[in-house]
Length: 480
Image 1 (cartoon, rainbow, N blue to C red):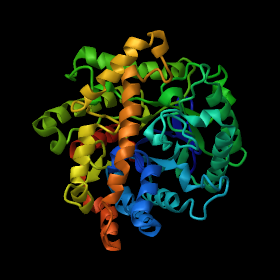
Image 2 (cartoon, helix red, strand yellow):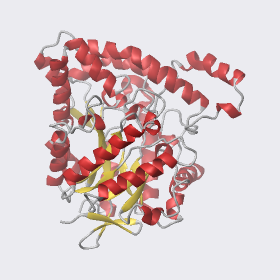
Image 3 (tube, one colour):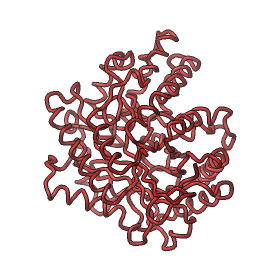
């Protein structure tokens, strides 16, 4: 067994030179909790604070610890391996490693759960990629940066950036000798607003150098700017600037796989061409320079009968068609990828928490309300509340010139910006206490039972999705 390395535009075993195609999934919502994955509103720090206030710090800590214990365990690793997949991208929140009020001091149990997951995967012959999904101050305005704002303050404060570099030094030192770690995904979906990506390039300079000072063995995966979509301002010497063991990460979500798709997906020649063109645009900068591309996130979301009724089966059939057609594009390129998402409460995961578990029963009405209000940004279906936000949108269109409406990030339309700030931040914040108050009066056993709802044995499997992924893996021989 040896480390993986970048070999030209692909990955390979560093000792034998044998090509390795990494096919896997993101372990999101675990060490970096996300609202649509486990059903809370807002950000992880919101619910951690609110739950401690509602039921006390001790009981709140019990829930979160049991949640971490159950969300990913041996049964999950074994199931993942059974599908023929060979890599798990583990999303982590910096809060697991340091405290904002005690920065640059490594927590005593910082690597407790991450070590366990890495070891469980290694025991099954599965590589892992460590992904810092949330950085101090928030590297983007997304809920998944756990900052509670629409702007990435990380790029405005040097101390946040210093802490980020420090964190990667700790991670690299800890895992430098672990051959089952494929590499380090330094920052998930950066959103540096500088027109020349100056902040991001400087950060990659510093972080790559810091990692290499203690660990020259592992691949470094570098996301493009603006949510892993834009490399156009990356330096001309990128092939050598950060070393030779570098992969460049795109995120290739197709709009056809989401509720607000511009058109119903039929798998027509024209639609497939649009899908392929969007993918090729994202990787063009690397292809022009012969660099290695890794697709760190992709995949449709799925309808649920309790929310979407009789349209569920037909819409999911179309979403699986999107999935298959994307895989066909990737297979022709021998592209390594990590689909989003391994586990959740039923929106996108390969496995999902059963409706008959204590957690889903207790939060059923709350989740229906959250869905109706469209307070999660990811894949939101806003048909019930869209009309409420039209007056704000129209006011801005009437009073602000078209030129001045173009704010960073450009992929957020005016409408999207309004709803992200007013709905997925503001309205979500007002629901945080309601979620936390659902725990009031519960015994420690009942709280533990809620957390255990996320255990593999309490989950359903998304069979059609897993069947498609397994068939694709068998063609490429990723599970060998």
